[in-house]
Length: 477
Image 1: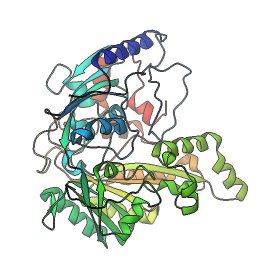
Image 2: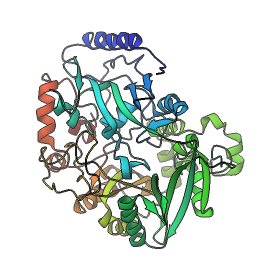
Image 3: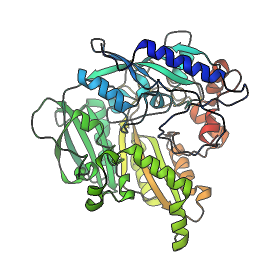
Image 4: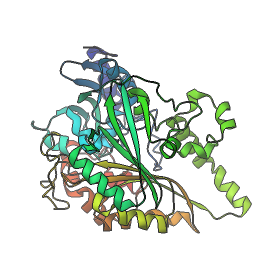
């Protein structure tokens, strides 16, 4: 076993957290003081100090024999992978951005190329210690007295508490990853391939361990098929002058180290680094490599939003205002062609990321992940293993990610984002809540099982110290 922290240090950090909670006024809202964020929804300032989470950002212990890790909630996946990869292990799902935290991915949502076989990050959690709105730490497991919290915690975004420790399952991996970039001329053909790979876990007789894709346009779409391998040979490096997403269009095969594969999207924040000129080779050479990271770009975007630099430049030039359209949505695979056709016509943003996923049939991450789900009861917490984000178990979805701006007459009305929400709802999909949402309360509660959220919140936050999910996601509190 190895560790970057110790159990004693963890206990001391939890006590500091408790003390910072006790120091808050009794009627003050409870939030954490977090250094990094991957959220894209503004929040109202409260003027109240956040909870002290210093010392809660390490890997406590890696048990290589059991293939598990005990990890503090504020630990980033970058640090988590650095601790597990020397053992030839990785988390079952590693979200694509380095500074996403394990606690953030579980209380929010994370998705990546292994999600078509391993689901979402919370499905690999074996147990977790949650700091509740009542100032208590409870250990939640799928089979103990806090199973209701364990099941409802995913997609609760801090409205039920904060994970301070999580025990997660790990997967054994080799040193290298072979990639095949397969082009499709229609979204229907790509969808057919996704459904086949999700069922067979292979393509052309070769095992597929990771699966994601990119749509560059209606008639240029790719799936990237990743296979774990020990094959020797030169590996590509996309942390320097070369840009990963461009390689998808120009190479049919590739070889990366496991480390570089996990962070292949982070260097250029998928393709969004182009907004800072980094797709220009001259600018890229001058931009320090250590600053080619998603968290750096995120801070720059936040600075622009606070200072409204681009808005002022647009106004001065007489350009139409911009609406930020930064969303990830889950669409049932059979509806993907319809959604992409609608998106191309009404939004027109390219490229878009495509990442297939399937959730398991039980809240332990076990069970039949290949059969069709038989639960369709929206808002019924007994019908879904993860009621706060009730994707149908056993059903193949495709996460569609799009991040950019569109020109509109009045961005304050968010016409594009609202239209996307309506279309996703029409197609029986769901939208992640890391960015702005505009649902009315009844629709929101139907999509995210508001009744069950309220019941669980009342048990663990009886004095309403924590902001509700609707207030966080829609009212921006």
